[in-house]
Length: 161
Image (cartoon, rainbow, N blue to C red; front, top):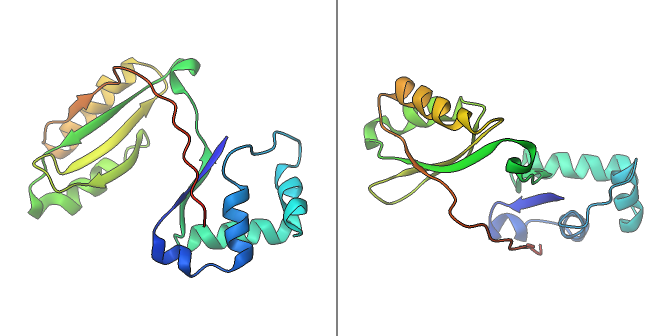
């Protein structure tokens, strides 16, 4: 089920009514049919081409930071973990670029905390987590702390633009 993540309240205020309706329509219950965008577009009174153009524009303007499916990677044989690093401020941009260069890294955020860089690692196999952590540590010369999931919760959040 695709999720659309809204960047900020200020960005949402700059949206026209059609963009607002589009964002609301793309959250949850995305149709699993051969032409899903056409079906959503028809429900909004748009052409498929206009819907795709608007979606591309929302992503390009960074109103939406991501649009895509959410997978339970463990069911596919993979693994994920929340990870954190203590990065010296003078090195933060360099380390962020190095960490973000790994395709296994998603959702990298700066935090106001001793552990000031937090990110998610997702790998095709459970062993890939340790391998990726070792590669990040070798690349950055900084330790990575891994926080594996202890319990799973399912919470659906829809943002209304």
